[in-house]
Image 1 (cartoon, rainbow, N blue to C red):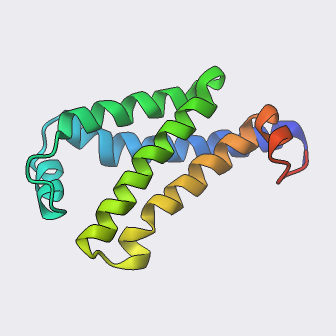
Image 2: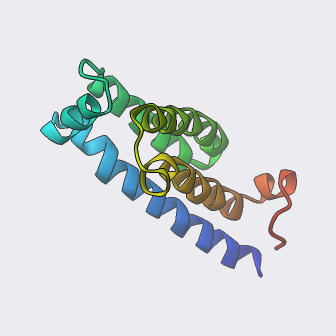
Length: 129
């Protein structure tokens, strides 16, 4: 595949990841929606710092989308996704739909970054282009 094709696919995956994070996770937390606090309480975090988590997710998503800081944003976002997965495990949530959802998001995020950034592909030569 050509570099431009890989880049377009990578940006499409990155955009899907970012849209999901912004719409399904960041926005409810920053807007103080009940679904955010209720979900955290249901997972055993009744006094969770929902606003702080939303801000951290927003910052990591923006860092991920900016080419110079994409790698930093991905690493920091994996820390957040890891915490989300541990929370789901601790709550005894279903395996494939809840516990592993962070893994699915991480695969989409890293796949997008690897495909859109030739410097990352040089370090992780999974795809040739």
